[in-house]
Image 1: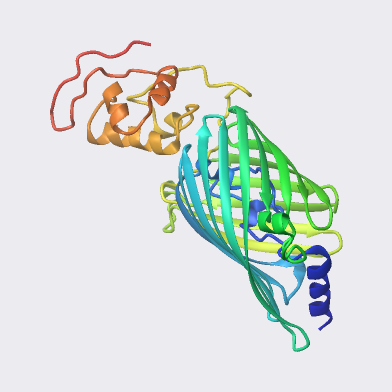
Image 2: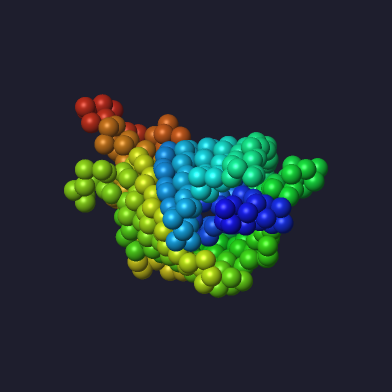
Length: 374
C-alpha cells in the first residue's frame, strides 16, 4: 500500500510515464533526442526513423530497480527505407499489479533534405490504478515531434519534444509531463559512436553520455552514464547469422543492465527479428572522419566491402549482390533498375571501378562490350 501511495504522489508532483522502457540497449530510462542506430534498435526520436534499414520486429522485458513488484515490457515493429522514410509502432508497459502504465505509439519520419530529417509521433497513454482506496483509469492522447540535422556524415544533431498536447492546453500536465531533449551524435568511424543528450524531465535536467562499439558484424557493446543521478548503464547484443551455425538466424538478442545509486539495478532482455542480418560493424583501418580512399571492383567486391561505401544503404548493397548473382555484371542501367538514385550512382562511381556498359545474363544473354576504367 505504501508503494501505491508513493507512486500516486509521484503522479501528482512529477508526472507519470516518467520511466521509458524501450529495448534493453536503449541505455537510459528517459527520452533522449539522438542515439546510435548501427544495430537493430527501437528509435526513440521519430526523426531517426529514416535511418532504419528494412524491417525489424522485437520484444523486451525487464525488472526495474531490483523490485519484485515492478515489471517492464515492450514490443515494436519498424520499417525504414535506409535513408528516405521510416515508420514504427510500439507498445511499452511499466508498473505492478495495482499500478500500470501502458503507452501505444505510432511514429513516422521523413528525410526532407539529405541533411535534414523530421518526424512526428502520436500516442495513447493508459494509466490504471487500483489499490482499493485509489481507483483511476484514464486514456490520454498525446503527441511529439523531432528534427535531426546532419551537416556532415559523421555528426548528427537532434531535438525531440514530447507531450505537446499537455504543453499546449495544460491538460493532464500533472500526469503527462512534456519532456524535451537535445543531443549530438558523433560517428568517428563505422561501428563506433559517441553521444551526448540533455533532457528536461519532470524532476531535473539530465545530461547523459554514451558510447557504442560494434567490434564484429554480429556483436555490439554499449555503455552510458547520467551525471545528475550518477547512474550507469551497459548493454550488449549478439546478432545470429548463417555463418555462426545458429538455427535462429536473423535474430538480435540483447541484454541491458542499469545501476542507480539509490534505486538499485535494472535488468532487461530483448529479442529482435531482423531479416537480412544487418549490423554496421567496425571497419579496421578506415581513417577517422573520412571516406575509404581505395576503390573497389563493383563486380568482385563482397557484400561486406560494398556496404561500407559512404552514402549507400544496406538495401542497395544487397540489391547489387543479387543483381550480380541473378543477371550478371553491374551496369549503370542496372543500378537504376535496382532503385539507385542519380546522386547515389554518382557517389558510387567515386568509390568503385569495373562498371560494365551493357550486361549479360547468367543464361547467356547480351554480352557486355567494355567497362569503365579506374
